Image (cartoon, rainbow, N blue to C red; front, side, top):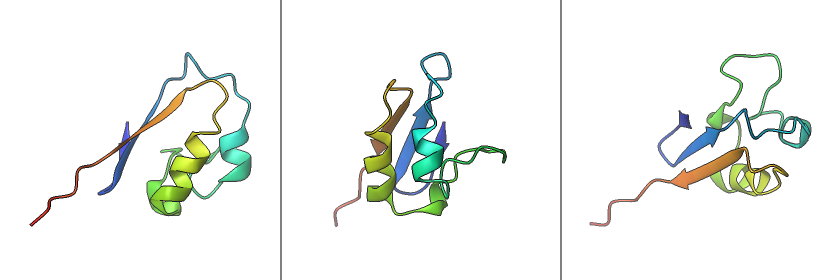
Length: 70
């Protein structure tokens, strides 16, 4: 599980088909050779969500954090 102030991203390695779409198209967030391999500070939240939606296996999922309304 990877989180920042806006979003939590989960990764299920058993579901992953290793298509590599995430790392090829958004390498600032989904990195092949660095641990932790997901860096949510690498792009804006909407860009990350759009990339997660392209995951062919569904191994990547996201949850937006609730914003406090004053």
